Image 1 (cartoon, one colour):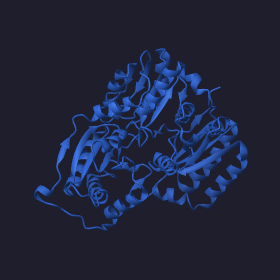
Image 2 (cartoon, helix red, strand yellow):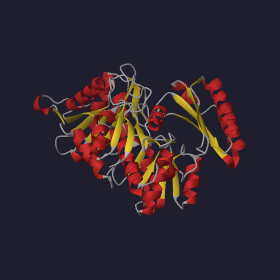
Image 3 (cartoon, helix red, strand yellow):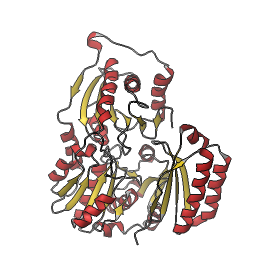
Image 4 (cartoon, one colour):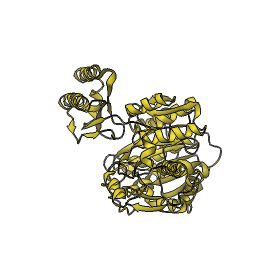
Length: 462
């Protein structure tokens, strides 16, 4: 994790931690780094989510880019994966998304994509950081006609919707579903997308007001969707996060189908159709213990990376794997996308249900989800650094691993996008994993000054 960039771009509270001045500097630095050697007038595409601060920050970023002599196409409110796709379609040199994803509305962020639609590797992020923080390069300031121009894309959402639709094998005719847009980017695309595919879609939380993004809705607050699906006797429901690069689902009984289970369902189908390269799926260290067992039972190779869909994708590109994702709902179908795409994932899953004529609960039964408990502790920047060197914390984690043995595991890590340290334990015995998780969290609380947030417990569907 860099000095500016976390696991998913630059992020912070808008107008205090992530200021207009900093956004402008990042825009200028990105234009310098990502258009180095460009033989024509450089071009960027810039999109944003529905936060009040997104206009402020996108204007600052675009001003920075234009000040370097690069042109900008403003996409308006679009999902993050739309930026990744439209970089290529519009033949741009790079793309920038203004969003803090699943975070509350007071946060915002800057995600940067290269000209091939991929998130930036560490080396390029470090060059941008060096320019912004260390002032290593004297940046140009063209004048007159050398200053970049700003235009607005009139068809950005349509072009993205058409792309997602082109990935679907079967229409969704006859399906009764609920779609939770999280009052975020999907509010600009989901209604049209699912109508075009023929679904009878109940569109929820698609009235953003700048402050209600992710507020008791979307993939991070899925209980309301589960209740809605059951009360209205729908086939299933899907939920996105604020920038619509994640997708979770609920079956007809209101059971949550998380990213791991979506991957299991889709991986099996891809393998049956000969579309799963090397019969492999890429996940992360946070992927449920049960997913590894599912892969063993179905003769699939499971590869685990660090948390973050950029690391999943890096492994996929390195070994030519075609499918991977995260428990949080970042799913990458490399045949169709260069990053996690919530709406594309939803369409792949729903099309599969329609094609196989099975209920989602039946399809999800291919994987048994192990009980899992997570304690999130809010810590400051100093506490996150001390995590790596504190002997008592290390000893507590080692003791937990010994206690769980082969029946479970514990993962403790600082978040790359929030001021948190996450303690996750999973295994067959719920009482044991809760006790182990509690011991480690207590040590972190005492030694690193952590403030405990709500514990999340995920029991298997029995």
